[in-house]
Length: 134
Image (cartoon, rainbow, N blue to C red; front, side, top):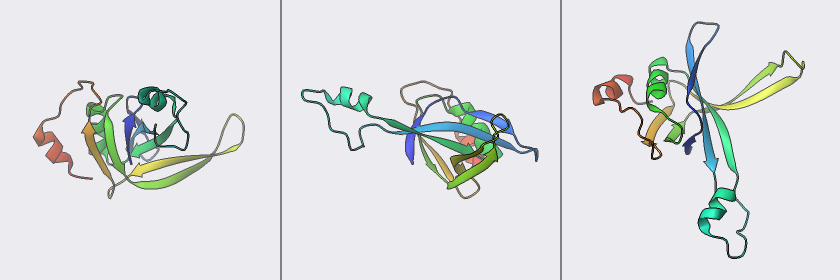
């Protein structure tokens, strides 16, 4: 999946002591079934079309640390991972909740395609090679 990052990635510590990195990835835009209005500019049409947001979880810790350092809102990413559903009971309402996420584990991939026009901190080639290609 290719999309733009919506917010700064955050890291959470699991009960097991491992760290997971969470971020949101927006896809969509002009690629849906709606038709443009008469005399509507393509840019206006693209801005009007819906964006779908996806939750992405990065489980390899070194890859997650690099993502936190490098990813800024607007960055363009290619992610490849497992589509997983987390099921839990909401402690406030008592309802059973389901959250879909793209889980990047040992066999997943996270590729930086662009920074979306924002100048974020750049990683050295040695740091990138140290993480490996997931």
